[in-house]
Amino acid sequence: MDVIRRNTDYAIRAMIIVGQAREGEPVSTRVIAERGEISYQLACKIMQRLHGAGLVGSRMGPSGGFTLKKKSSAISLLDIMEAVQPPLTLSRCLSVDGFCGLKKKCPVTGRMKKLQKHMMDYLSDITLEDLVRDCRY
Image (cartoon, rainbow, N blue to C red):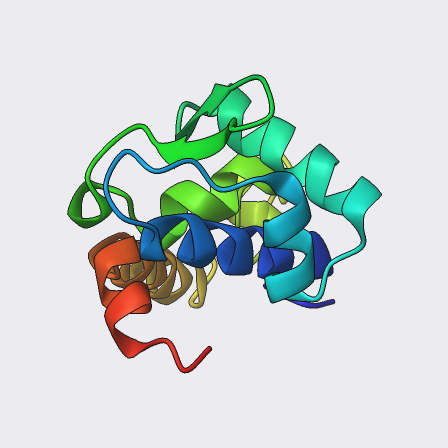
């Protein structure tokens, strides 16, 4: 299974495109779809999810579109990912209580917890500002 799903990849692209706009300048879904190489219908759904997560604001009308609701330095890659896909976990034993009866004796669980924390911290440390700065499109 992919850690970063297709819709998550598209959401990251969309957020980079919105993040590249001048502050306060709305970006239409059509522009997001074209520049991000995303179908228009899927771009609409993704932008709804990002809006629902409070990452973007929207303005209606002919000159409307989406703007960032926070500074790009305050939006993490993890924020974007969590807006469009279920929480990331390395194993069910880390996320579902009672999943495994060996959890208290398991020699791997402690290490998996550390790896899980490292992964979440790493994704939290990457900001949209970083992604926009490093973007090649």
